[in-house]
Image (cartoon, rainbow, N blue to C red; front, side, top):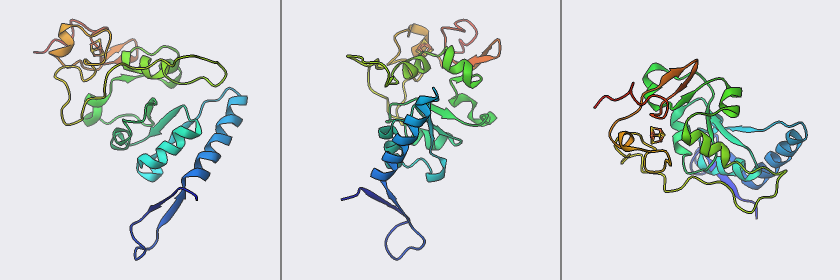
Length: 192
Ligand code: SF4
């Protein structure tokens, strides 16, 4: 029995889209393996289905390395899927406080600075390598309605120190590579 997701409400609503999640997962998996042969990693773009978590989960089970969207709201909907998320456009000024790291794509993947970016990139499974245990980020993702005071990652960050639980780090420029973390700006961001 195919696992079908219906988008568009009940039968009285027209048009509607039926998504066969098993076929989607299969197709994503085929694409991911074709790309792997050329050392290309695949990001699953979730904008077209407004960040629907069930469809995004099919992407993840199909083997994509990242989830990507041009809307932060859609990426937030997918926070429970443990893959790095990419915002595929420049953030607006009003969204800057939600951005923790900003650099060109190559720099992010070869030299991530933010501890959470490092943790997420370290947790991506490598299908070419047999491992006994994957890297994980310790702790539970906090509720968006009850984020910790100070840095929102302070309850899960192995580098957290006293300042992190009191003040919220701002995005600061490190030679073009912007990061919001007190590891890189311990004195600049003390605003309490
Ligand atoms: S500001 Fe502190 S808690 Fe937040 S990511 Fe940096 S070191 Fe970790």
